[in-house]
Length: 56
Image (tube, one colour):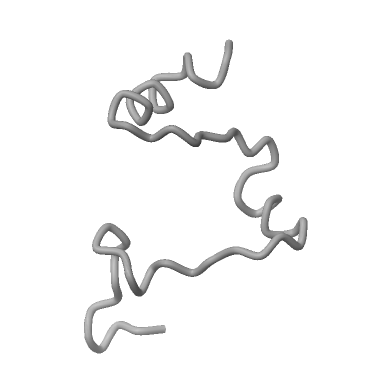
């Protein structure tokens, strides 16, 4: 099965996402590879942010 045939990838592609990739080792494997990862959580409205008093 090609990556773009998977339901989630197909949906993302239909929404205009042109650059999709499959991470065989997952995000932890990607992080362990040493490639720089941009932290976008503070700029994203889609990433959940800790509620006041629950920061860890």
